[in-house]
Length: 313
Image (cartoon, rainbow, N blue to C red; front, side, top):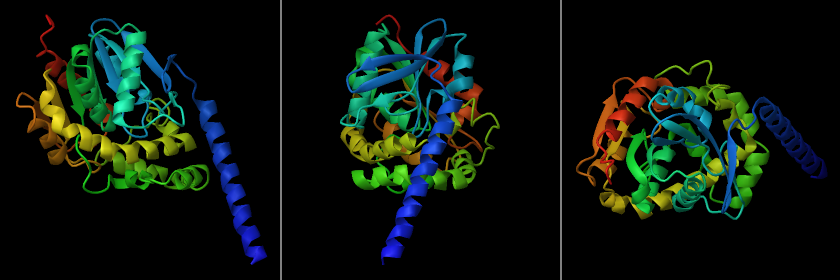
């Protein structure tokens, strides 16, 4: 019994050591390339490029602002593009007592906009970032010109989200324990397969791990905060989905036909049925990572939706 306990203890020590070493290696490969803005509940890291009307890009679960590397460059010829790390993601921090709810994330991002002098902006959100973009449009309609949703999470999930389902860990102790021990080793071993599932049926670009920020998702903090996001998302969406009809600005929903993470019909319908003027489109044979794999299509869609906004308001 004692020997077995010692063996288990040694295994956990090795896992903790491996995770810490892996985190350190990831941290040495990336440095914050933008600006850090303190807000209530944490710190927002963001990058800026281009010139023109403000456009804010909000990434999805386990993502970061580098996911928009090519999309931001493409849109910078028309907009001042702000690529943000959501609270708790990338190089943005979220204090432990700060809620992961969409309401709180909206509040923090709106405070960031105010502090950086962004009075009004077009907003585009990918995956979970789409659900938060909708929350922002509800919370501060006077600050949002239009909303473009790229493979968005808009309604509570009725089933899992593919390989991302593992993030649903409601218990705080269990979440912390998994993040600090087995999560990183397992994801290091299965990472390529899981990423391929998220991108399916499109190939994963070779530059995604570094240029696109993919490796940051393997950090233990990313798993921990991603789990908090996942658990909070269901309640957040329950609270906001019945209010979508209150959004008055132009709204568009773009999906990949073969998205295996979220079901296009469910998440398009949740918005389109509530907003008569909402525009939706589906890209044939495309998957969930449209901002990475379908850069020009996403850029054209955002511009098209934004062109319908009344900028005299």
